[in-house]
Every structure is written in C-alpha cells, then in structure tokens.
Length: 252
Length: 277
Image (cartoon, each protein chain N blue to C red):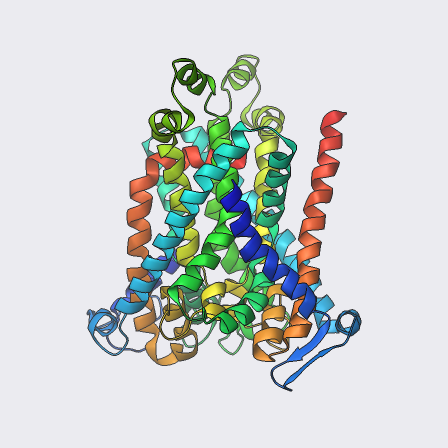
C-alpha cells in the first residue's frame, strides 16, 4: 500500500482527461491527451529527454574510462601516493555538490561553458568520479593478482596483460559503475538548475518546471514522469544480474 | 591514475579554492559589488539565525530519515531474507519500485497530489480538514519532506542491507537453530552483530547523502513557509542564486564543506580505535 499508492495516483492522473481533481475514485474520462501533449503538443519532451540521455551517457563513458585506470592503479600499486589518493577520493565523495555550484557557475559563465552540454558533462564526471574510482578499486581488489603475474611470467608486456587479461575481467565492474553513474547523472537536479539554460534543459528541469505550473498541468507532469521512468526501468532490467554484486563491492 | 587526479583537481579542487577566495569578498550581483572584506562574511554567518536554524534542521532531518529508513528497510530486508520463496522475490521488486521514479517527479507528486490542495490525498486518508496543509504549516513542513524522502530512498538502504544479509555465512544461524534459539533471538544475537559493518557503512553513506539532499526540500517547499523547512543546501542555494549574494553563499559552503568531512573523519578515526581494541 505504502509503496503503491503514489504510483497509482501518478498513472491515474496522467490518464485523467477531465482535468478535475480526483479523490480515490477512477476518473470519468480516461485518455492519453496528456501524453500526446507531452510528446507532440505544447510541451515537447523530446529535447530534454535527448539532452538528459546524451549528458548522462557521455558522463558515464567519461567516468568509466577514467575510473577503470585509476581504480586499477590504486588497487595494484601500493605506495604512499596511492593511499593518499584513495583517502582524498573518499573525502571528495562527501563533498556536497552545493559547494561546487557557486564557483563553477561563475567560472563557466566566464569560460562560456554555461548552458553547454560539454560543461554539464564535465561537472557530472567530476562529481561521480570519486565514488566510481572507489568501487572500481574494490572490484580490482577482489580479483587476485596471480593471473596477471602468470601472464607476466609467460612474457606478456604490461599493455598486453591489460588488454588480454584485465579487460575481460573488468566487464562486470564496468557495467556496475556505468549503471550507477548513469542513474546518478540522469536524476541529477541541482547541477542542471544552475548550469543548464534553454539549450541544455534536461529532463529533470523539464519536470521541475511543472513545480510552478502544477495547478493547470499536473496531468502533463504525471505523463512526463511516467515516460521518464522508461529508461530507468530498461537499465535496471538489463543490469539486474550485476546490481547485487556492485552493491556488495560498493559497501565494503 | 594521473588523469583522474588532474580531472578531479580541475573540477573539484579549483572550484573549492575559488569558492574559498570568494568567501572573503563581498561579491553580490544584486548590489553589483565585488570587493575584499576579509572575514566579514564569516562574522555575518555567526550572527545569521537562519543559518543555524537550517543547520539544526539538517541535523534533525538526517537523523530522523536515517533512523526511520533503517528500521523500515531492515524490517523489509529481514522479511524477504527469511521468506526465501518466489513471493519474496516479487515483494523485493515491489519494495524497490520507488527507486524508479525520478526524485523530481516524486517530489512534485507528493507535494501536489498528496499534501497540497486540490487533491490532498493525505488529508482525506486521515480525515484531516482540507484547510490544513502539511507543507504550508511551519511546524510540519519538514515532516512532510521527510515522509517523502523516506518513501523515496528507503529502497536504496533496503537493497544494501539485503545484499549484506545474503552475503552472510549461513552456518552460525543453522547452528543457533539447532541449539533452539527462536527467531527474535537469532536476529538479535546472530544477524545484527555479523551485519554490523554493513549497517555501519550503509548508515554512514546515508547520512552523507542526506546532508547533500537538495531536490526534495527545494521542490516541495523552497525552504518555506518562513524558512521553517530550510536545509543547509537549500538555504545556501537561496542566498546565492535567489539573492545573488555569491560571496556570502561561498562562505556558507565552506561551512557545509567542513562539517561533513570533519564528522566523517572523526567517526572513522573513532571506529578504527574501537577495532584496534
């Protein structure tokens, strides 16, 4: 009950054509007007949706590329620098994004990066990187180094070992980190509020704008939210296998 | 490794330093001022009642959300762990549902449909008169936000705890079963102690993330009515991006940077000692 109730209202309201406030009853007229408004009419969802997926996707790719190498490095090389790096990443994981918004906003306006996809992607990478690196590091820690040593003894160079031995083993970790980064970037609200303008309006901003228009367009808001769920559901289904493992490595 | 350090350095390190510099300046777009004023911003913060109220409210918010989340999520995780049947799997899917909804949607949905008129489902369910709105009353606005956040983020704790439960070795529990321990005894003496590290990390992360939370309080009340539901994040945002007082905002971010980092380090140091002993 506790879980279902809000969902029930979300769906019911998105289908409500009468535009009258509802109680617990099912509306008299059910239809897809709100959805068609969202998809083809007054508010077009396509651009925010596209922006959201592009920025989250690019941020995910960036995070993965950097985190894989960095996590591997921290896991395999034991020196004072690596432990310091690890510790500082742990501290950076705690830094609230609100700390970064003011300076980044001012810097980006000067650098002409405000309201560009590039700017948003760079900041999203930076914010999600510390956590991703820590997860990748934990992941590599769980893989015994023996295999790589065996490859070195057989005469493989370090790049060869990386490509032939380490890369296939990393797939699981990469998927896990990629998934969590994508979701974090996809639902991020504070950064787009500050760093995105008309050109880069993301889905969160698009839905957020109904905050002020809610009295008249609550049905559209509900419809947009239902549509926004679709990418998340598909990702979760795709990643179900890896989820559990990721969470365990993430907590240790 | 180097690219990561450089990247993080450029996009987190430089902004923090820049923010630190800004915090010593009177940098205000509204008054078009930009001059060095030393520590005056910090002195203003010490006198700023709203800042301390926001900080206190953040503390209340973090502790209540973490506590209720934990009780609810641990109960649910334990239930599903003990069920071990197909029904348990279905139930797990159901409990995880709120994670699918975007926080923005959740916040608007709860605010508009459940708490505020004209829908006011909450009032109708509990038979409260429709003139009263949780989010519009200074005494209860924060509660409304907390209920929403608990609904939305408890599943996250739930999966972490469930993953922890499922990775526990089954032997001690079997042994205690043979020794005749009942279910509650098993939970209290076997499961809780062995799960302690997972619980600790989960709650620590939860508190850290709660400190960062912005979407829910901002969308649901924007800190209102009368600042009664400002968390520290929303208050900084309000001062910096509504009043355009970037210098003062930066000074406050310095506070909000130091507090959680310090707290977490303190907890970790404390914990390390307790392990050594």
